Length: 287
Image (tube, rainbow, N blue to C red; front, side, top):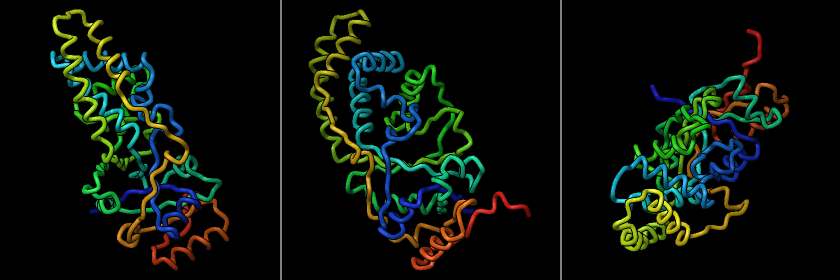
């Protein structure tokens, strides 16, 4: 049996996808939850960088501190060049329709895990330096120890993207599968920065036994050499041609409290585009 995945979107996103044939991916940092990718929001200030370097040194517990630079600059790149979509295993729940109501005009689209991954890899090919990940979200994040916890998760998995797949338990009702796209076309800059800083700082660290002094040296080196990326509202989204939607979309459903005229509009659009229309949700109807 295929694993079905569902996404609740606005009318505008539906039109952009079905009429304009454009698929939109957002930076997780632009989402409402301040704990989304919590670690990435603490990569900027000197105090936070020092805290992260400290946690990394504690977790890695190696004399080769160059690993810390690799991890930090991979995180820095991932923060600036990763985009995502949220999908769910739940076909529909009251909570999902209410959270993503869009003024009772929300639209639920349906596909399978296999088709979604294939769709993403077609519009974000690896030969253009894109990484595509589709993973189930874990609801294990403790907001009191978020930085420590997410550094630990990242160093265990050895992936800077790990933190994107952990959320607080309060969101467990979403049963989320997250589709993450990372644009690696700019990663060479972070790689060369990391390689450039290693010999100098390793030379400075030689003979120093005080851990706090070592952490200060690493933090100062990172802050002095990392590249700043200017972001604006337009940079928060990555929009790509969606390809052949008939190979991807398996069904469209309309909000249970949408008005009849609106339901008819969505039905007509689906009919014109050859997309299966699954009608209006009956979740509140007596049977």
